[in-house]
Image (tube, rainbow, N blue to C red):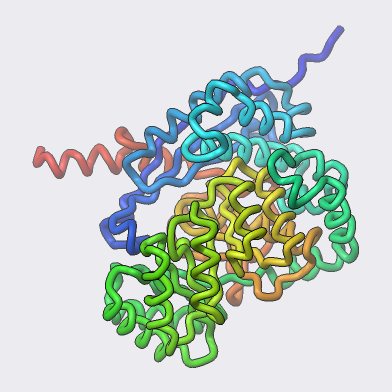
Length: 448
Ligand SMILES: [Mg+2]
C-alpha cells in the first residue's frame, strides 16, 4: 500500500494595502504618497506544521498601492507550476521551482527576469523557503547556514553570471565561509546583526519630527541613520544640518535620492551636501544605469555609492560590481526572484569584496532580509564590519514572527520559517478593497 505524499493543494493570493500615505510614512523624492502594500501569497500544503497548524508557506511582493492588483495577478499566473507539487521534493530543492518559474517561456516574455513577473517569482520562491524552514524546524538563516556548500551551489542559477562567478568559485567561498560558522552563530544569537534606521528621514516629516526621531535613534543604539534627499537642495541642507546637530559629528548619516537625478546633477547635489559628511548616497540615479553609477562614484568620492533595492536581477548586480560602480550593495528580499537569486548576489558581492547593506522597510522586508544577512555573516563572509541592515519601525505588528530589535541590532529569529506570515486579522482588515478598514474608508469618503 502506498502512503499518500503531501502536496501543495492551493495557492491563495491577497491584495493587502496599508494607508501609510496619510502620515507621509515612507515618503521620498520620487514616491510622495506610498500606501505600503503586499501582494501576499500562501502555498497551502497537506499536513500540519510543528505547531499543529495546517502546513503552509507564506511569501509576498512589496508594492506601494495602486498596482498591487497587477502584482497579485502576476503571482496568480504562476499557480500551475506549484499546484500538486510534492512537498518533500519541493523543500529538498527550492531551486527546482525557481528554475520552473523563471523558465516558463510564455511568462518570460514579460521580462526576462525583471519587473512584475520577477517579483511574483520572488514571492512564490520565498514562500517555498518559508515552507522548507518550517518543515526543517529552522529559521531560514539557519537552514541556509547549516546547508552543505555543494547543495547551496546547486540552488543557484549561474546563467549570465559565470563570467564573474563560476560554480567552483562559489563553492570555494561557501566552504571557506563554513570555518568558524558555529562560533559566529552563537555570537549572532547573543548580539544580533547591526542595523541602521531610516525612520527619522522621510521627506514629508517636519524638522521637529526629524530632530526628535534622530535623537531617539541614537538613544536606541543605532550607529547610522538615513535621510531622504533630492526634492529641494535648500531643504536638504536645512534638514541635514538639523540631523547632524541632533546626532553629533561621529554618527554615520546616509542619504537616499530614490533615483531622482541625472548623473551630473547627482554629483553636484551630493557635493553640495559634503560639509555634513554623508556616508553614502543611495540610488542617485536610474537603477539600470550602471555606467552612470560609476561616474557618480568617481564624482562624489569619498562619499560612497549604494544601490540595489530596484536592481532587477543578478545580472545587473554583476555589472555594477564589474564596472566598479558601487561601494555598497543593497539586496532586497522581494525585488529579485527570491532566496535563490539572492544567494547568487550575496556570492557575487563576496567575490568582489563589496559589503552588503540590505534594503528593508516597506511591508515585511525587514522580516525577510534579516535571514539573508545573518546567513551571510554566519556561513559566507563571516563579518558584519561596515554592514548594516536597514530598519524602519513600520507595520511589524502585522507579522506573526516580527523582527526583534536590541541595541541597534536585529536579534536572530528563532521560529522556523522565513518570518513571512501575517496575522489573519491584519489580512481581514487591510485586504483591498473588501477588508474592514477599506470598506469603512470608502463609506466615509462617499459620505454614506
Ligand atoms: Mg532607498
